[in-house]
Image 1 (cartoon, rainbow, N blue to C red):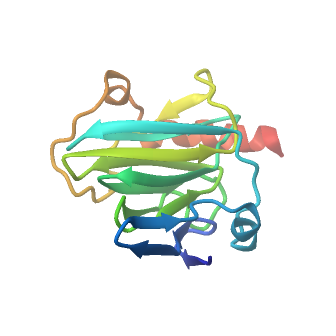
Image 2: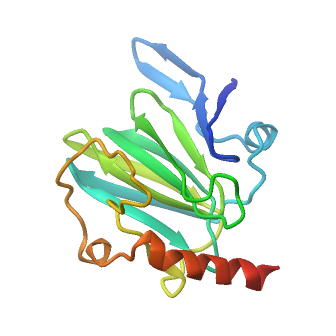
Amino acid sequence: MSLKVEKTPLAGLLVLTPDSFSDDRGYLAETYHLERYREAGIDCEFVQDNQSFSRRNVLRGLHAQLKKPQAKLARVLFGEIFDVAVDARPGSPTFGKWHGVTLSGENLRQLFIPEGFLHGFCVMSESALVHYKCSDLYDPSESFGIKWDDPDLAVKWPIQAPILSNKDNQNMSWAEARPLLEKAKAKKS
């Protein structure tokens, strides 16, 4: 089996599509293979898998962890989402830029989100089941979020009135987050 790898305008952010083999019974796809993904530039150890079920117009994000950043490999088991990553790496030439891609149970595409990115998605089908691998464990004390509609980021979401969690309704602005990101980078250096 092989893996199609598409680079995006944001360094390290990759769209991956594994080969699938179909017949009258259904299909088979290899959704993760350590060596093939390393050859594609994904050289992290995944330590936690998460699964999220959501209904149409639910928007989750934009999320990250400050001192324990997580790389993520996201895919959709069924349904369709618009998946977004925002470069939150101070010093990166694309700092504050976003990229979105449609992932679905039919197209089998995956999005690899490197450490230092914000991540979020909205559901465009009746419902969607999303699975993602993480390179570090979830730590609620390190978790933070940016408003989905922050004008400085200007993400072009395909929905107008998303359904948000109470927590995501309280997310900070990009302007409020920038000093925190800079401070976390300085501590790592």
